[in-house]
Image: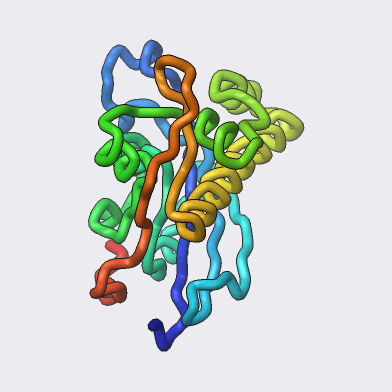
Length: 206
């Protein structure tokens, strides 16, 4: 059992472009408009003590790296294949080496197929996204205060869904989804921390 508070960060990014706009398949070419993250502290039983949502637009990214570098686990959905490479042009060199935990990566290793955050949230939590990625890009392109508020609301809502899905899996050891034949399925998962749970926090920021 842990003898010190743990820090988790749950995060999501929205981009400035679609892949069709860039002509490449590299998320690093998309540009990032906003990063939203939920930072929380956990007690020795891994129960949340405190938590706060943060959002950073492109001009504010320098203020957010500390929150990632102090985390024991950085939780995302498809984050290793999308969010981490998307943020790479802005990020400190060590960012990709931090303790990233990708929910979709774990699910894929179990069932051998990809699935959307929205579908998992719908089947597991009876909830879903509040808006679409297409609209998020439009909000960024408009750039007015109201549109940027809508963009932030959307990104933060995705972070909240990711957090709630992760917490459900930690507690119940399973998630639910609907297969290709429209049959409800249960995925058994184990999101436990490895034995060596305290990462090296002496990594430099730059």
